[in-house]
Image (cartoon, rainbow, N blue to C red; front, side, top):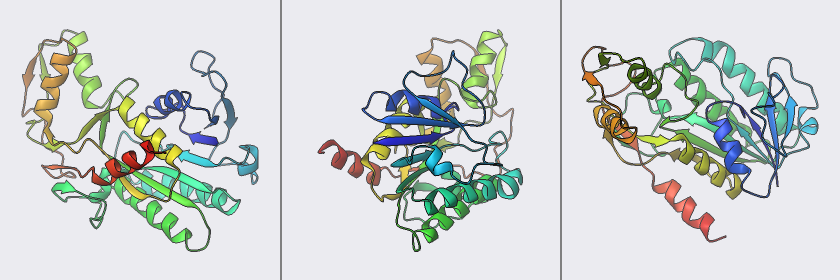
Length: 283
């Protein structure tokens, strides 16, 4: 099986590449720049493609992959920026549409739990999406357009709706890197929100393993929540990290307001994912 992956050097992508290297696949990474030798994985072909100016024969240049894992997306430091709708959405839609028209048989795309919008509680894939952020709206629109494209082109679609993940290589403005920086710089306290928000967390290594399994499963699964299925408050998660890494710092909850674009309590329904994992394990 030949698998191509966009965003291969990004936060999630580098972990997915490591997971895929554990399997007998022909792996092709896609990026805007050459790979640095220090970060290059062995036995991987790297193809330079810029979504703003990609070749008409991109699918052929990638060796006609059996599966494309599409993780690339820019501007994730601000989920509310119109950049997601005005720039990212048309770029990704055009690239994926051209790949599918050229004959790509299977596509896995990273979606987001922000597609659910302000809905609370345990959220399943059958819930109607109602995003309120530009990022959530852009991803949800891309999903709908890809599903509509399936009416005209025969391809498998796995839309991985990612919940909250953390780990090595995460952007500096995320919660865990901020906590680590506060500890390492000997800050007196760690300023945070009230911490009562309930979320759904997974380490990026586990997310990468799940994405890899879904890609190798290679079925038309549609939307799949990639989550733990376990509700945990942000305060509980911060305290877990302090214990996990043996860090010591005083917490200052209530310093930051709660974000207006997220409900106080939501987590994922993992039932569909677990059914797929069970079926995959029998193959």
